[in-house]
Image (cartoon, rainbow, N blue to C red; front, side, top):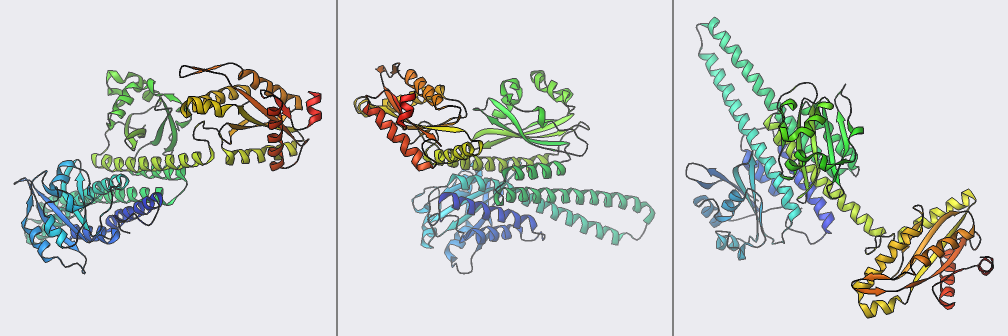
Amino acid sequence: MNLFNTEHNPATSNLSERCHELHVIMRILAELTTPDKVVLKILQTICENLELALGEYWIVDNKNNVLRNEEVWYKPSVNIPEYKKITSQIVFSPGVGLPGIVYTAKKPVWIQDIVHNTHFYHTKVATQEGFQGALGIPAIHEDNVMGVFVFLSYTSQPFNNDILMLLASIGRFIGLFITRRQAENVLHQKYKDLELKIKRRTSALIQANRRLQLKIAEHKQTENALKRRIDFEKTVASISTKFLITSDFNKAVFKALTDAGQLSNASRTYLFQFYDNGSIMDNTHEWCNEGVIPEIYHRHNIPAAMRPWLMENLHAGNIIHIADVSQMPQEAAAEKEEFEKEGIKAFLILPIYAENELVGFIGFDNVVTTGPWREEDIARLRIMAEITGNAISHKKAEALITHMAYHDPLTNLPNRNLFQDRLQVAIVHAKRMGTIMALMAIDLDNFKTINDSLGHYTGDLLLLAVVEQLKKCVRESDTIARTGGDEFLIILPEITYPLNAAIVANKILDALSKPFFLESHEIYTTVSIGISLYPLDTNDISSLIKNADVAMYLSKEQGKNTYRFYNSDMNTHV
């Protein structure tokens, strides 16, 4: 898949494919076992998976405060002698050229067209070789830029913020990965030095034996730490893949909390999400270690205002790391009391953002003992929080698309699609229970005149005001749907007598008899209502809707601002 090519698929499908390719890269890198030529393998892996022509790695020369080219990888089919020669000779200062800009910004930089971009330093040679698009990714570990990866493509494509967010996570993952490889090299060298020392020692064996045992213990400790780091990185990659391949968001979150909790030796891990514009927090998911009491049942619908210290830190983007709850600051008194009530000794909280909006947080509790979390563990858990934020953002987007497919965009009422489903359910229920249901067709009288004379904006305001009055006249179990410009349908399931429908119609006529005051206008409007009954009038959906429309037009012929049943005998009876 070409990262710069977005022409063939819809945006959502393209994004899903790109996410998959990027996380395939994370998995491949995590499984590399040989320490030699790590950077070259990273360049090759990314170029081959994303179909990029050339990759460079610019290492930071802290002594001279410049970036120097350390590695270049390109496809065998690429012939770039002049470009390669210039790359080996040039250095970049911070803020200069694409490597320098990425180093200073500490985030990916996407250049759509290097020909018209002043920041790409050796444009002439690059364009002669046929390159058009460029991408820079910083390799970051603990906020330090270790180097900059630059990739060139033969295509030029528009900016994509979603891909940049994922590439930022990839950059942090690569930073951790390179750090791990460097640690392996150090460990390997220490092991070789240790072997050399053993061979040279031909005397004083008893005295040296104690020192040897200490070094072996150190080696074992370092080895265990390295294994822990590798396990953590593989878990982060697995969590990311899980969110991509499953449609069950809740299952993926629980798996992520379980893996993260077990690796970090937490007693309890949990996800809180914010609702009602961030005013309410709700514990939606939780994992507990064996023997630990769940708290999720007591952590619902909590007003954010009750946790001022927590919210202030979360909005500031801070990681909240408390090694001893008893030593929490005075301004966190409310939070301290709650944590102590739940028996928590220490905790770690990571904010979750989706599209730069605070949407929740992931927490890790220790109910056994006080003590800090490892800094390297926090760095990896933070990546997990970012992945969860991306998943929440994707879930919200899917929910919004589904909602829009079944609701009217102006009034947020069910549209014709959702109305048909609910009418079918109401008929099936009435048939099974042997009850009556009513369908009301409502049309605003003279709405076109109001809309044309006062404008569409005022017309929309009138529709919204009418909807609010309609909601007051029906039960929560009833359904109001907007099926046209000024046309509404109301389902009244399970009414005892046909007269009940007439009572609702009279309530609506009375509610709409009063004027509306909109945008300095005093507006009077009325409605014509038609009522059809199941099963008294018909047994099928289409006839039920048609009969309600016929009755509604009969109301208009009778002078408007009234209601009529489809059944003429029913009109006489009422």
